[in-house]
Length: 131
Image (cartoon, rainbow, N blue to C red):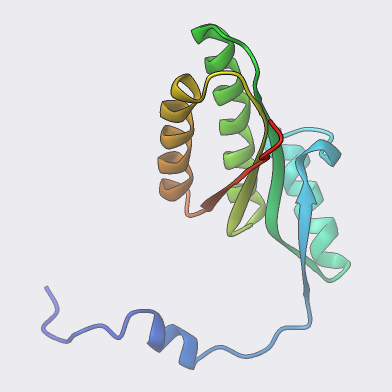
């Protein structure tokens, strides 16, 4: 165990320098696939063009009133959390377009947020107030 105290993020930030790369938001609907081989190729091509995925944006629809529909949507969103991590995005933005039963969706969204944290991705929820 080290006896020196870590400066944490401040030490890392001191060594940072600007990069000639543009952060972008990737729409999940525009992805052909969340398969690792596709994401690897996409990441390489974006990098070659000077882009870095900063955020993956995905629409969520918890429009079913049964547990199975909620689980299917949670599973679909989990694939996008993995994709965001694989692409090197620091955030996944989940737009809640439709939520039939917020009480049923909340545990799934909470678990998804925890999964994102473990993957090193910040999950940001965007509620559509019209839903």
